[in-house]
Length: 358
Image (cartoon, rainbow, N blue to C red):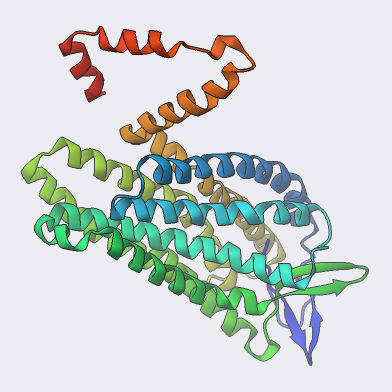
């Protein structure tokens, strides 16, 4: 999609769709284009629907019900915003997978930057969530001073600034190009530095998006697990479980894509020097990139299944907002408030305590 490689000669852009094989003719990549046209639009459409609804619910619950009272809430809110950035750009890429680029060069640059901004900010906030859990459990006394909403906002601002800086090359190098009678939106590197830029940006993406986060999370969770084995606190176990699942899911969805683009831009090093091998690699990139895009609608599902408080707030939202408004048009959704209150307060003390615990 936005990671296609191009060359230029004396200021005139020349499109290539595969790896350069010296003086030989570049691979056509027709089969890969047909695969993208069939695969991407329906999948991206589903991701847009579920990603938008799910992450908007996360934002709503964090703001309206939890009211952003902790550093963790601040980071979860920013993670949901990162996922929404992906959702915002997907309709454009879904259209482009089938048709020509008709949205102009400004949107080409902006959407390419948004793609990378969502990627970097997402992993950065997962790292911050890991560090947040680390401080709360391993250094609980210090965490009382450090884990405040103010520090959460400050670190979030710095994180977005770093993510924007990391995404700048995507906006700088992505341009539109006229090919025959149609336009494309892809990365264009100066011919004399083409391979160097490709490999540098790929290494940066793998180091910032995969290697460093993995090292931080392995070290952080190793210390967290050691501490939990000593104190055996069930509430702390549940809090760690949510962040741990978010981390594992991130790597399951993003690691294959990072590995594929690394192999693509270092094909010579790994002796992938045939059109057949290059074509298979580009198919793998299309599939793994699509899988990585699905990640933006997975986190809300994780919250729903792993977070008890989130389920409680979500149930309250649907009962008070959705069901209430539907009851105006469909009486089956209506439940009398007095009857509901009566049934609640006639419970025995023991039943109320069990209900509160759930």
